[in-house]
Length: 75
Image (cartoon, rainbow, N blue to C red):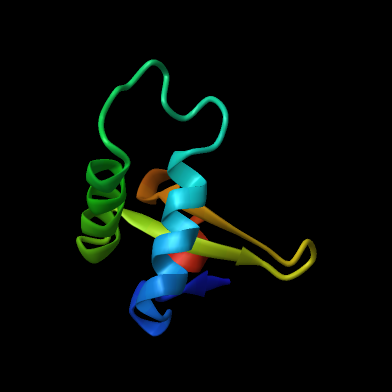
């Protein structure tokens, strides 16, 4: 299930994004400040280039690039 980012409280969305951008393997040696990485993800969400996917079975959220989202969820 896709969760519209606009429906999340600002603080909740920020925490979700921070968790995503600080996970092992996501920085790849990137020294970009955390605030900048969070802003980039917020912009991608706002432009429809990224989505929040909630998995009902695992009760987990993921941030996915548009091309990673199953087509049936985008329709």
